Length: 108
Image 1 (cartoon, rainbow, N blue to C red):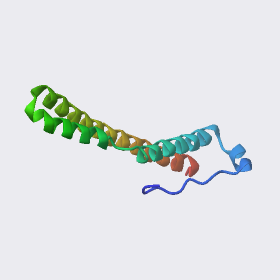
Image 2 (cartoon, helix red, strand yellow; image 1 turned 30 degrees about the horizontal axis):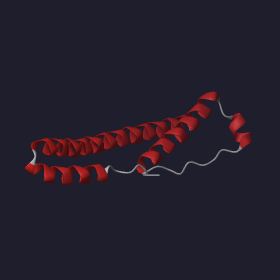
Image 3 (cartoon, one colour; image 1 turned 135 degrees about the horizontal axis):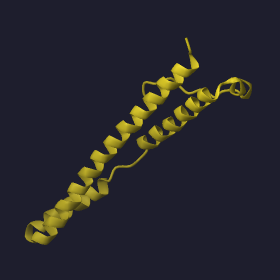
Image 4 (cartoon, helix red, strand yellow; image 1 turned 90 degrees about the vertical axis):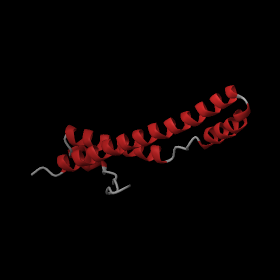
């Protein structure tokens, strides 16, 4: 996990002794970790970008094709911006869940 400790499985006897808040924090940590890992495995829309460039190149001779190609390229760039933003939000949720889990599991 990127900069985080590995999440260990909790034995059943220890799980039953945990408070509901601790169990909830652990479940939230595991859930956000899975969501963050999912975001790392998503593929990029490189085919959309390549098609947009090719259509845009041929569109130099035809304004309509040029507009479609430019639109596809812009769509690919916007898609990447959204993916980066989504990944950073998932990372922040994972970081928050990890901090909450550590706070709940180590009361002082």
